[in-house]
Structures are given as C-alpha cells and as structure tokens.
Length: 524
Ligand code: MSP
Image (cartoon, rainbow, N blue to C red; front, side):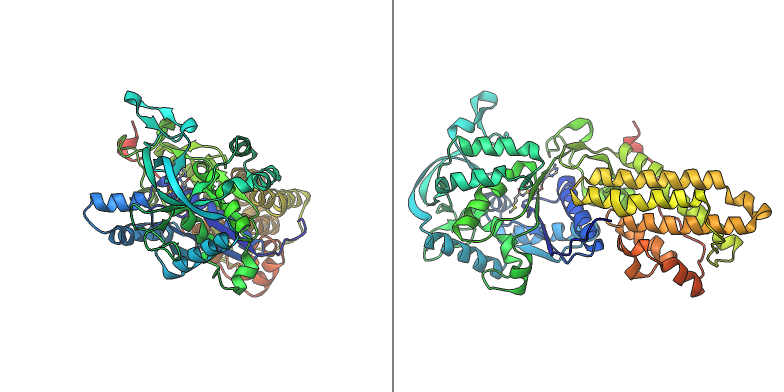
C-alpha cells in the first residue's frame, strides 16, 4: 500500500435549490460525495463532509410567489425533503447547511466586507441578460436562439433583460491569476472541462453584478437597505460558513482550503472562476480541487424534465430496489465525470448479477456452509497452499492497491470494477476447490479453503464499504470483524486469528441482496 496520507479532508457537494423535490441527479451527487467521504475515512483521514440547500435568489422567490406563500415557507418544506433524502440514502454528512441560517448570513457579509476592503466592489448600473433558472448573468454573445426567436442561455433556459442599480465585483482584475489557476494540473477535473473555462477567461472577463435591488429574498449587503447579494455570492460562501468563518476556528485552520468541491458540470464556471476570484479578493486560500461530474439522464439518454414526465424520484427507487443497490448501480454504471443514463432494467441487472450473484451468493454459500458443517466455529488454517496464496494475492492487490488507487483519483467506476474482478476470483476459487466435496474426503483441507474464503470475503466486504455501507456493515457484523479492523489497512491485518482464537461463532447468514424483479411497468 502506498504511503498513507493523513492530512484532513474536506469535501462538499453543491448545495441544492429547494424549489422542488430532489431528483436522481441530486441523489447521484450526494451518493458520489458520500462514497468519497467514506473512502477517505476508511483510509484513516479526518474527514469533514458538508452538503445542504441554497435557499435565496429570484428562482426561490418566484416559485414561492407562484404558490402563494413566502419564500421561507417554501424553503422550509423543500429543504426538509433534501435532508430526508440524504438520511434515506445513508449520506454521512457532518453538516447539512441551509443558507437561511444566521451563521451563514454572517459569513456572507464577512466575505463581502473583505472584498470591499480589497477595493473590489463598486456601485454601478447593470443592463443585461439574466436567467432565473440558472441564477446566472450571460453576455449577449453567449445566447442562442430558441423557438419563435426567444433568447436562450447556453443551458437552454430562458433569459430576461434586466436593468437595475447593482454592486459590481472586479472580476476582470483576476483574469491572469485565474488563467494560471485553471492551467494548474489537478485543480479542475475532469481535464476535459478545463478548455471551456480557459476559453471563457481568455476571451476577457467582465466585472460581475453581485447585488440585486428588485427583490429582497437574500443576504443583505452590509450597510445597504435595498441591496441583497447575488445568490451565488452567498451560495458559494456556504463552504466557509460550515467551518465557522469568519472566526478563526479549529475547523477553519484544519479544513480550509477544501480538498474537493464536488459539483455537476453545469456549474463549473461559478466554482472555478467566480469562487476563486472572490477568495483571492478576500485573501483566502483556493480549494485544492473542483470536480465537475456528468449528468444522469433518463432512459435512452433523454434529459429529465417535469414536462417529459421522466423525473426519477430517488426515494422511490431506493424503496423499490434498496438503497445499496441504487448506490452501487450509480457508481458502477456511470464513468465518473461522464453522463450516464438510468433505467430500472439496468439497476435490476447490476444488482442481481453483481451484488447478488458475484458477491452475495459467495458470502452466503461460504458462511452458510461454515454454520452448518462446523457449527459456526471458524475454520482452521491447516497450511495455505499455492492456490490459497494466489487468491490472497489477488484480493490483497485489489484491497491494498487497485481499489484505493482508483477511488483516490475519483475513478469510482474503476474502483468498483477492481472489486468485482476480485469477487470473480473468489468465485472461481470456490468452484475449483469445491469445499462441499472435500467435506468427506479431506476435512482438514476443507477448513483451510473455508478459512481462505472467510478472510477474502471480509476483505472484499470492507473494501466496498464506501459504496454499499449498510450491506457491508451487516456482513462484517455477521462475520464478527471488529470495527477497528474495517479500514483498508485494518482488514489486511491479523483479526482472523484473534477472532478464531477468541471462540467466535457465526450464525446462519441472512441474505444480503434479495433478488430484484423488474417492476411490471418497466418490463416492456
Ligand atoms: N444551487 C446551485 C448550486 C450552488 S453550490 C454553491 C445549484 N443547485 S441545483 O439544485 O440546480 O443543482 C445541485 C447539484 O445537482 C449541481 O451540482 C448540479 O450539477 C447537480 N445536478 C442537477 N441535475 C443533475 C442531473 N440530472 N444529474 C447529475 N447531477 C445533476 O446548481
């Protein structure tokens, strides 16, 4: 195993607009961030993980108005659904932040004051295009023509002409340092997203309008009674709020700059241009990495939308297929960084074929056999053979090297594939060794084979823990693996000998991954 990195690790997701209920795209980002957070914890790092909701801005204000209620009422209800989604999906966040919270207003005003003190804010008049859906300003040159000649943003959302007095941020001043930052290897990934951002900066940055006067649902600009901050100024600041900024807290010194902002590809501009510029202005360190993942599309690669009626509800999917099956599917099916599509058939196929057959049955057969034939006593190693050592080597390579190296660089799909290959190796081994035949002919050899499998299965259960945490914990509990042996390093240690020596007995295992059936409406 490569040298352990023990530095603190701060990971954040984007904070979601709670103008509607969460969909599978929101769930995808939360799950991916959770896999990374759990992975880093299992590597022994001190992890802080933040997620939450982005509740200010015109989009929320208009939605509330449409529904005849206050923005705060809308935010309270909808933010609750995001919080429940995270709990249902087993997302191990340390803080779920809501931007309406007092400490967040305070942090946003503090960063504003630092930008002002740096001479980077001035009052002027904004005249230009604004997309409420994206909460973004666009230059005329970026717009496209939609049906009937309507102007559309690069993301195909409607734009409206806006004229109002506004505070401006001197974004243009940061052109050179931003270019340098964007060209720094590792800052923005996947690298394929870099060129677009570099081109945007190279074509010349205009100062950014950072306050609004036409509505009041936002963080007040310090010292002003009619300006609220542009929602992205306050939204991005959430990453600092959660650490206690502007106070010089232990969390600030330990976790800032963030190790990773995990976001979707549509909001890379805000995170790799505006946010670093605000931080440079406020004289704060820049996050180490921003990763823009791809989009989850509906069956057939279509964009999900309410009008197409193909918006997948993550909670329904979790209920239908199981939380771990959904988590596994999303990490396994989609190359992290690229778009991918979701379908019920694909979830059922992956869950039954890989979680159920390749891993669940392997564990079930082995543990069931031990419970029955050894009365639950752990099998004795009567001397490992070359075959056993070959399996140990394959599993150890996956657990110590292939899986963690892939997860470390956010190649989540490859990490899962490496795990699956090691499961296949165990299946080939059990078929070749046939412990059920050895039972009569060579009971001692049978025990060694079962001991080999027991150790390898536990290693594989621990290694896939970040992806399917509940199933992994359930299996490791059944197997008696102590909590401190469940890390990537710990599971390669000597726990088996101690467990066997301590007289541990295994009870009959319970099925881990019930076989899924394709729901009738999807079995077209
Ligand atoms: N509120 C802003 C983010 C502010 S971060 C300081 C926002 N909210 S959002 O609700 O529209 O999106 C939240 C996250 O979900 C974003 O990272 C976005 O890219 C992601 N996704 C939204 N739809 C998605 C899919 N269909 N698939 C995958 N991720 C998607 O933007």
